[in-house]
Length: 419
Image 1 (tube, rainbow, N blue to C red):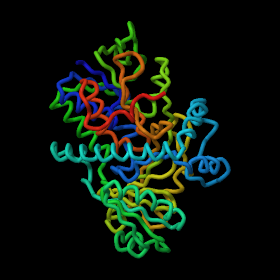
Image 2 (cartoon, one colour):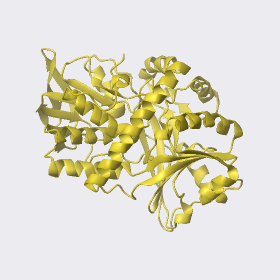
Image 3 (cartoon, rainbow, N blue to C red):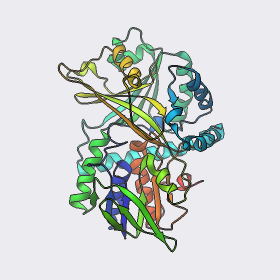
Image 4 (cartoon, one colour):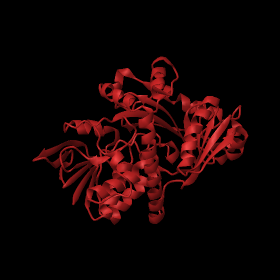
């Protein structure tokens, strides 16, 4: 079949890989100049089965109220730019905060994360893909607050029951596990180490895989190509109109991340995906003593620190602010607070790089890997929330099996179109 994939982030490129491997004629369209130039560009660079629980747990309504009244919430809503989509997405999000829904989806998300992680590591090894600094195993969650530490131990117990390598550590044990913590003014009260999490550079991996797809599997990439519309007739999509002309295909696959909902709306399809804006800072570091040994989550500032060779990626903050990716220095206060806490500064003469991107949030925290309700030859592989890197390879494998009429190795039912 001739397949046209919309989007060249981690989900689009991995989907192209699996479909081309199966012998399909694949074209990938993206408005950027290179693969992985938007949401997949400067993310946390961690494959995190430990973090695959839905964000909308029963505490989310309280966080929402705090966002309305606090100057320093963990996430904020910028009503001026949030847009009307938030008004329809929000109630669905709150409805999915019921404990029964969250517990069920936590299992689905973890199973998908473990499946995807295995595929990602196997492919990186098979193709000898350059993924930046190379994989590092393990992530340490360090806590400065007893209440948060106690609450997250319930999730640690869940991960342990599912067979993950989880250790609950005292504050002193955290210092031995991660020497960077000794640079803080006070030790953590405790920590949780998850050995199954992996550090790998998502952007480097995606671009390397795109290169392999192009040169070894004859996948066509149309970059700097704006999508205009998708024409349909007789219940089937017939032609994708772009700034470079029309593209015909037997099947069209939407991998547009946070823009998927708006694209689906042009076809009259209700696909409730709302963009959550996140922020990352990449700090050049010359000495390893200024970077953690493995991925480190600072509980005080809710910041992820990921070592990437001579760079340190710091990720923090979530804003519901519509589709723009504008940012100000104030948006990076948690990042600078984390760097100050651990006495980290950029290498002499070098500057940190700042980045804001959008995450594709579904109301229930699970992706959509499914045939669209219409037209018949339109498919979705999107809505990966903040876990595109963690789930991307797995959802691509599922979609490729479904498209070929085969039973996937992972149950696709939780990820069907459901609105």
